[in-house]
Length: 205
Image (cartoon, rainbow, N blue to C red):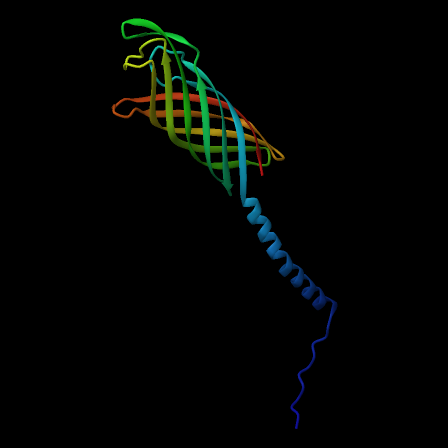
């Protein structure tokens, strides 16, 4: 003997729409999640040009022009990257050993950067960052630089807090950065300071 059959619910238009919307939402969630994940991770690279003040009080030129590059990844608003700068200095006269000589020098600055970006709409990105790495100064003299050789190279660690402002135009990035420099000299208790300012032209993906 069969029991009573359960009453069938009527198939209304509202019920059909609910099922269709539920199916569309289920299909769209992976796409939206994948798109959000893709938008949260990016890559940036830029050429830099500007100047840095001379951190050492050695009678040389107070400002050194420089060129360099930077590249890094963006994870949501976090930036992780690396940078390289070359600062040149015009020949100058400096009193070394027993005579005044012509000295030519340049700086190589290489390090890593960590920053946090604050987007202002779609028009501007303001990024607070700090860099750390090695600052290498090479000098050549017409005779003796004072250490028994006419070429000297010194390398010191540096810390460089700064601010970068970028204007995104599609995949193009235009902007600049301003930075302070803290340069503790090894084998010495002295700490030197400098300032750098650069323009940037780059891309992002």
